[in-house]
Length: 368
Image 1 (cartoon, rainbow, N blue to C red):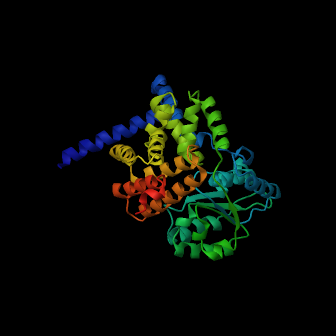
Image 2: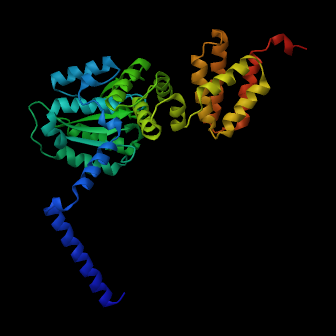
């Protein structure tokens, strides 16, 4: 590049910076309607999961026994080190954030709480640098309160990082308390477990999911059919985050929230197709059952999606005798295990269909 071109580019750059300064000092220079549209779009894009995240413990849905224990801690003011264990989307991180808000108040919260996602920042350097420097930081807190470190998905931290964290917990326990949110508490090393109160969260019940989904749909003026709510609950599997995300995605993308719309957005096998497959197996009509399986496979669904939907439909179906239902679930479970081990082929699923059909045939037919 020539010297002249470099000078020209530098002049353009200076002019650009001067323009930005003028606009910053005189915001009215920006078209008002344009700013209004930007504001609307920014509000519209806020995920409903964050928009309707409970800010206080009393607003949390489900796991009331565990929430009551947290309310006792909030009243006492002396928060112990804690491990919150349970499946995703059931309120672990929300609960500890609400507890931190209650203990510290909105003025101190931003300064006195460090939230990290341990699945992204899980190495020993994070413990040595960010966490240790936060624990050493001097902050004016309400009497009897502590700084709080929240480690989400802590079960994905490396063993070395957990060992380093154990020492940090010991040294700074007078000023800093740790809250671990994890899916499996057994992946947290024993020395950390022994220093923590372990709170276990369970999956949310259907009625609890339904109540919160109705509240959100009413506030957002979302048009949801009764069957649409059932589909949202079915696809969420007790996961409130998944249910709310599916509701927002379906409402935003397709408007009216119906079962077909939900399953289209979630890209899961439709339970009616799977129900028809099970009915064919119950009738021992193997050709029809394999044809329905091939239809699901042709739609592009993975073996794990088909087997999971098959399990949930079999568990909730009323058309099977209880003893036969148990045998079906047992066989589906074995196939699920093989798929998780890596044998996720149409042959594996076809073998399952054949075994389910065989269960509905009189054993005398197979005697020689």
